Length: 371
Image (cartoon, rainbow, N blue to C red; front, side):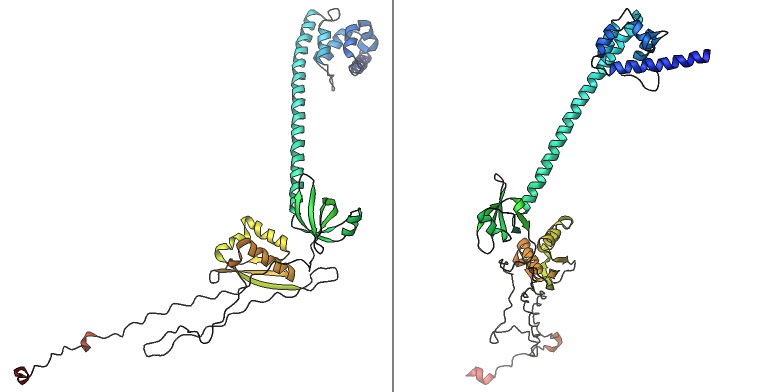
């Protein structure tokens, strides 16, 4: 009988806890706390001592799952002196104040979390906008193919090649100019596709070619003459003329299929400007030209060799970009020759002092002195 009674009490406690949990999930649990009676608590599993069982749920929260009472429930329960004792009412009031403080802290934390989330969203939106703006400004100077225009004038521009000249922020439009007709238009970013192929009708910047000057045969040539009159000057080697740009081989789709390699020479004092910090400048030149760029570390007559390889168009474009970056006067297509040494000063022949003799002047004739 004792075991059966204990099992029955345990089942009643679970049923009573489930009943109170249902009340807490209702719309107005405070009203239930104001009007609940001892008999109602007994009918829902509170017997044999429903008041103590309800108080234990308020204070101790026994069991695997505890019920969460808000501060309003504690406040109403603390004034139910008909159900709880004076000591229990005082304990309920103290617990209600603690719960009220905890609710305020949770509310402040929720507000702070909401503000942090809002700031993070604003920062992320700003970052995405900055990325989009950098991408749009990166379109300036690119060759593009126009697409998706529906107006009468726009349909004539579709599938045409153009050059992006400017980006207008206030209108969110790109100012483009058609390569063949020089016609200008304002387009959205959705109406353009970057074109990386070879464009024959685009004016390529003139390459800086160092021309060698051949002196006339009548011009005097500096010579070094030895003491015996023999000319010791060495004949000067003919300088190599710069190679002309090869005609690019263009495929049916307009891309350059020819391959070439070229070595140029950059002033050693400006070679670091080609690589930049952590190679960023060199990577930018490779991305913009499409050619492979290899900057050597050896110095030849105060110049550093730079090897370019790829398609003919990409190599010459890389050459033009290098000239634009460090100045054409610091770039040469021919291997610089070593400066000719200055002619050595001719020293007088060495004469020992023993070869010189003191010769006395002849004595004057006495007859001449008389005259």
